[in-house]
Length: 136
Image 1: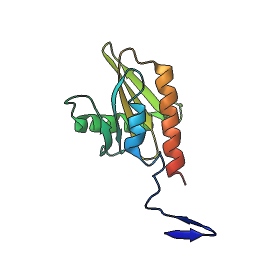
Image 2: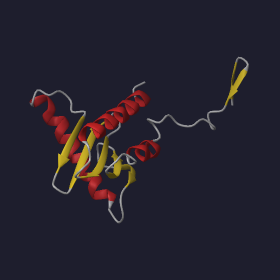
Image 3: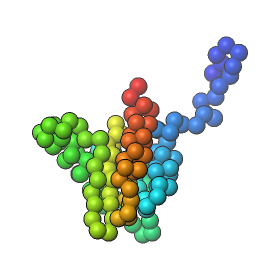
């Protein structure tokens, strides 16, 4: 315990900041309408957290997310778009949302009716939360 002035605080009892509690952050994101799962992946593809539907294996998705994220980051300056904060990959059966953070990538899996504006807003907020927690 640390004592400061007249107050006593315990770092053991303190909850981690949302931007550092990846399971909790991901848990909030996967509750969005039409989102069926998600994961947080380090830039090297290491799985940090996952909440995926059914028997979905997280490792192949982690590797794919890291590859896509690195490729988008690499091509962003060449395309004069700066760094990429997020991307959407859509097909007739589903959508994948990818957000870039200081610690890696947030990936959300959604069905075809997932609303881009709603998800983009939530993903932007999550990326900002991670940035604030890890930037300094």
